[in-house]
Image (tube, rainbow, N blue to C red):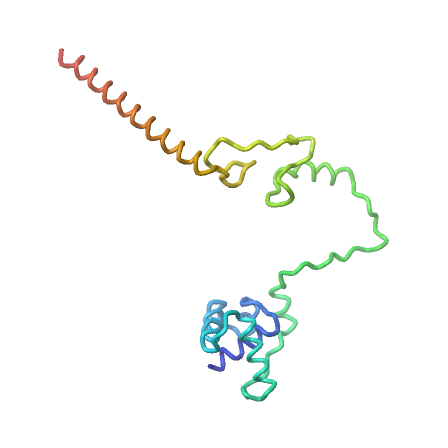
Length: 183
């Protein structure tokens, strides 16, 4: 394995993601991923964490005497924040209540949030019931298409029938027009 692959796997073992490793080494995240894929192939493992663990075990045994792992500097650690949940810092002496303006703003904008909760909003501006849309495309209330195979096939057949009827009516209209003009 190359020195670059070993460096990347040592940083993977520190639980850094590709962006953080790229920022630390001064290379692109695509290069990081390419080095990881090459190391995975060379070591014959399935996941990058397994490859990093093998390199760590080899380092402890003294098999790879290259460079020690690079610890991130404070500036680089601040540049890319980890995507983990951090508890907010709330002053214990602060007022726990909310102002009426904030509550009304939350209620007013509650219908704009997507991907949270059950999809059923319980505010005074929205209905408490949810019915599925009969439209084949996504709407603001229904983000994805929930039609079954039967509904999709019936729609295709209906479109084909309506297309043939409209084409027939167009041809009949053109024939009538030609008869009127030829008289």
